[in-house]
Image 1 (cartoon, helix red, strand yellow):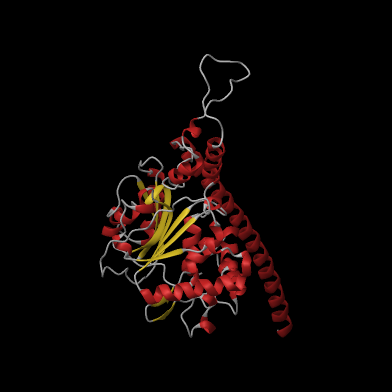
Image 2 (cartoon, rainbow, N blue to C red):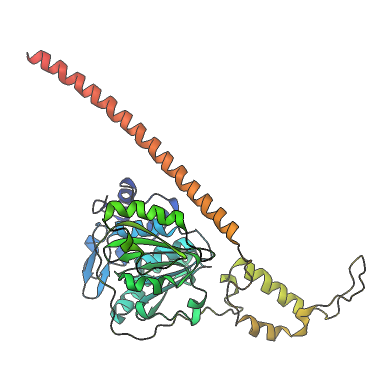
Length: 389
C-alpha cells in the first residue's frame, strides 16, 4: 500500500491510492481530485509532485499522499457540513485545502504553523490553487492560517472554548501532550495524528464517558503493532477513546519558541450570515423580522387570557445585530443527547461493516477469477510439457 501510489499526474496518483486501498470513500476521493498536489509542493519539486513520497526544502515539508489519505479517511469528514477543523502544524496547506473542499463554505477551517516562511508558502499555494479553479472556488472555504505553537494553544479563549469537530496533527507529539490537544475536541469530535511512532485516532465521547467498545478495538489493533497495550493509555483520560491506525515515522512538533496561541472565534455579521449553520441563519432571520414588528401582538384564533407579546421588538434591529455578533455559530443548534449520539455512531459502524462486507465479496470474486486463470495456465503447462516429451 504505502509508497506505491505514485502517478504521472494527480488523477493517476489518486487512482493508485484507491487501487491500494488507501482511500475508499467517494468524499475523500473527490477532495483529492479537486486539489492538485503540484500547487503545494516546495519550489523546485514540481516534477515529483505526484510521487508517493514526502518532499522537503528547508522548513517547507509535505507528507506522502498515502499518509494524508489514511488521515482523511480516519477523520470521517462530512461533505458540505458545518464541522470545524483544526490543522496543527498545517505546513503547505495541502491537507487543509482538501478538507476545505470537502466541508464547504459553512465550515470553519484553521491551521496553526510556527514558521513564517511556511505560512507565506501556504498562502501562495492556496492562491495558485484557487486561481486554477476560477471563481467557482469560493475564498471563504480557504483555511485561516495562524502563526503559533501547536503545543501552546489556549483552550479557554476564542474558538477553542467550544472545541473543534476534527483535528489533525501534522507532526509527532509525545503522549504527555496528547491530553491537552485532545481537550480541544468538541464532544463527539475526532483527532488523528502521530503520537510517538503510531498514527492514532482519538474520539471524544458525546457525554464525556469512556467508550469501552472503541478502546477494545484499539487494544485489538495495537496488540499486533506493539507488545505493550497499556502504554497507549498514557497521556489520555476517560471520556476519550484511542485507536492505533498504523506505525508511522514523523518529525517532532516543535516545542520552541513557546508563546500563547489564540484561535479567534468567528463573529457573526450580516456579511457572514450566509456562512453560518442553517439553524443559526433561521433563528437570527426570525429575530430580525420580529424586531421590525409591533411589541403587542394580536391574540391567537382561540383567545387566551394572557396577552401575546413580541419579545424581539424590545430591542431595535440595530441592537440585535450587535447582540448576535457576540453569539457563537452553534448558539441555536439543538442539544444532542447521548442516545442520538449512540444512534449516529451505530449507523456509522453499520455503514463501515457494509463497506467491509462489499470489499470482502469483491476480493472473493477476484480470487475466484485468479484461481480460474491459474487452472487454465496449469492446463496449458501440462499440454506443453506432454508435447515436449
